[in-house]
Each structure stands twice: as structure tokens, then as C-alpha cells.
Image 1: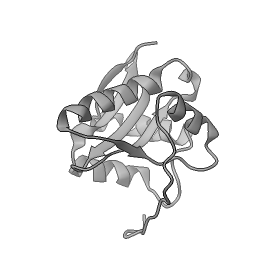
Image 2: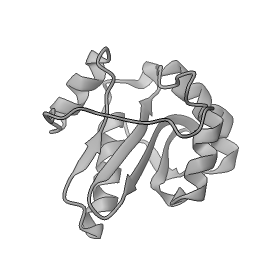
Image 3: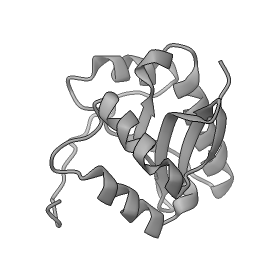
Image 4: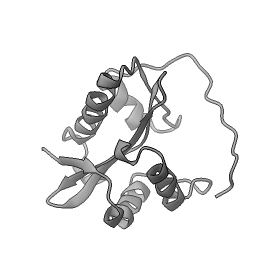
Length: 140
């Protein structure tokens, strides 16, 4: 299955948030509307949406800070999984950060998301022996 990958547009907001909720990507401490607003202020071109017949079917937010690339909010409509859409989205990210000199992409997967871990392993991502740490600066 082939998707049309395009840059996020404001008219996709409701469909994107709905997709993230169906993909179990949202959490109470992360307001998805605010996450979108924040991303649109910093490299909005690094927020991709995958469309099938004009319908939001996949998303990915990514960044490159000059040292590492980071991936967030990779989501594929549960009804369309295992058809190569997640791989197409990640291929698009890799294609965009390689010319920037990005040597490595990092991402975080929740411990209980075994399907995501299997997916990323299948496309060449490996578990790093690190602790992921964070400090919340703004309460959503």
C-alpha cells in the first residue's frame, strides 16, 4: 500500500489528534493540540502526514539538532498496519535527515509497546543501553 506523504497542514489537526488517540500515542501530561502548536513554531516542515485517498492515515514528527535526529508521534491507523506505511514514513524521515549530515536517529518507545519495538527492530533500529530521562518544564 502506497501513501502520499506531505507536510502537515492546519486542516489536518482534528484527524491527526484522532489518529494519535486511536494509536494510543497521547498521554494526559502531553496535550496533543499543544504539541502540534509547539512543533509548528519549530521546523514545521519536519512534521509529515501520510494520506490515503485524502484521509490522514499516518504521521511522524521529527527533528535534527546537529547531533542526532529524533522521531516522535509515528502513528499508523490501526486498520492499515502491517502494510508498509510505518516503514514509508520512517524512510521519508531518513531521506530528509541524511543530506543534513545526521549520523543517527533516536526515538523512544514505551516499555509496554511491544508491537512498536518489533516494528523498529524490523526496520533496523536497535535498543541502546541508556536511560531515558526527562524533566517537565510546562504542565499541559
